[in-house]
Length: 145
Image (cartoon, rainbow, N blue to C red; front, top):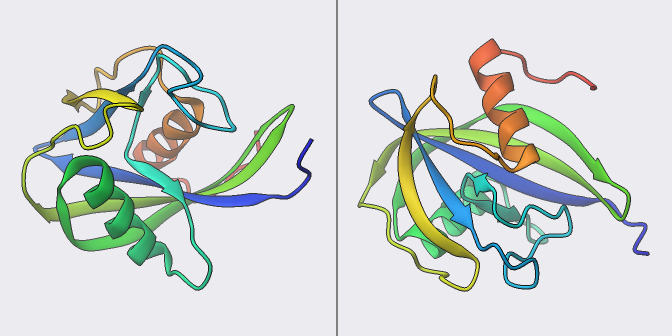
């Protein structure tokens, strides 16, 4: 078991009160994540690289996964995400200024992208994404649960 804590970013792309979510592959081997999540809906995101800012990580991950170019982002929350075999600090960012339309750029991991009303989110949601979206809607930066 790897006992290091990782750092990741999860990005809320918001347009007309709708958030962009991707359907993770049903096969756990293809929906690669130490925090599990096969078959769930997730926001774009991924691991922070050495010396990378949160904003740069968000721009890179969103572009790699969707082809969308972020213009401006802001940090909206922090999660402490843990499962038995992994531990990540997830930085939640909000992006309301961006260009492009979502495309499936990593079909081995994400099967499709869809826009969902914030009040009608799909299930099941990837738990780190669910926590970021919940904190954003409640305007809570951090809470341990």
